[in-house]
Image 1: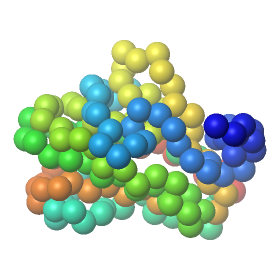
Image 2: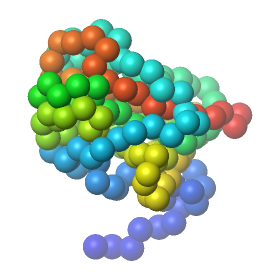
Image 3: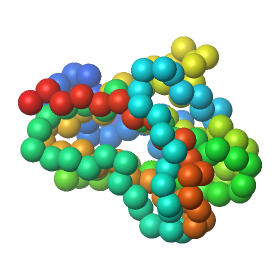
Image 4: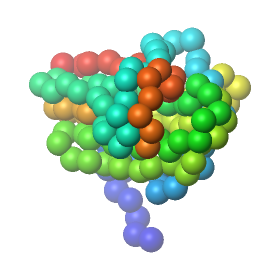
Amino acid sequence: MADIPLTNVSGFGGATKFLYNAFTSAGWATAAVTFPAEPRASLSGALTAGVLVDLLNESGSAGQVDQFSISAVDATARTIRVVITVDGVVILDATSASVAAANRGGAWAGVASTTSALMLPPIKYTNSIRLQYASNLTETAKFNLSLAYQRVT
C-alpha cells in the first residue's frame, strides 16, 4: 500500500478525503452504539425502503462533523446504508450487514459508545457536507441518530 499523504487525512488540513474504520466497508458489522451526552440525538422520521434521507445537508461554509453515529432502536432485522459527501465528492457509501438487535449500528466521527475509548477523527469540509442514511425497510422512528457539528466560516 502506498504512503498516504498527511494532507489527505482528517486533522491535517483541508477536507476529509476518505474514511477508514470498522464501519466503512460493504457489509460492515454493527457494534453496540450508545450516545455520549454532548451531541444532539434524535429518532429518525419516516423512511421508505432504500431511499436515502438527509441528516445534514448544507453548503457555503467550512466546518467539521465531530460526532456522527446511527443505531437501531429495536431487534427488527434491517440494514443501514450511510452516504457521506464532502465538498461534492462521495467519500463513503456503505451498507451494513443485517442489524437484528437494539442499540447496534455504526459511527463515522466521534465515539461509538459512552464506554468506548476509541475516538474517531472529525469529518472536515471546506464548502459542503451531506450526511445521508437509509434502511432497507419502510419504517418510522427506528433509528437513533447522533450528530454534532460546527461551522468555522
